[in-house]
Length: 330
Image (tube, rainbow, N blue to C red):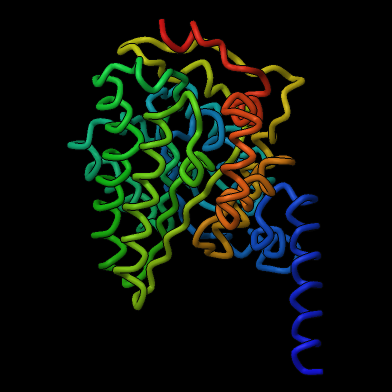
């Protein structure tokens, strides 16, 4: 009777978990936190330093945080765009934030020699930084064997080494405070390999290696490490994406009819993950989340499915279209 009860419990758990994985636009843990966990309003008064804050996921995460009265240090290369985002943050805060509560920091994250100076600007202005959100980065569309090595170097400089160096700068501050929170916008491509994006996928897997290691080293300290893993999202990422040739941009765009998560929704889920201090959070519209669960927990089934469906299916899930082979090679 006892083992029968356990068996029934496991079966029910599996059914409920599977249903939630199919219905939710994020992993089940994050969905539960959104419904039952801490609200982002608990972050009110905290200071969050966001890189890549002038567009895309970084911009919309800033908006979501501003609505709850979170103080912001917005860093990116384009001063005018940063000012636009700042103005919007102040508007969305509905009086919770004053002009001094949103600091803009024009910054090229690939200039690692400037990281300490720029991070110190935020610390000196606010007196502290509570959360570092590493968001700046670029995607890629290219054939694996037609990618120039210089592209690998350049993409890793932005997506990996700049993130690691800025985090090490922030760690000095967090260690001095005795607590801190580091978050990185990774990708579901950092969990499951994405076709026609070998360098990008490699950079995101490297991020997971670096920051999982950081988390384990500090497991007994008051340091939280969060990996945020969005799937396909409506941003301008395809326009700036790397190809296989150095100095070349993809110069493509998303289609309004694509099956993607909105940047607004992604930004809000990021805020939920930050306040609940998750270790790793996935976001994506159906069938991205159940597909990721299968890839992680049922790799044999996943590989058999890919053998039948082909890599084109995975690419179509990601970009809502089949790959144009020529555009990735030239």
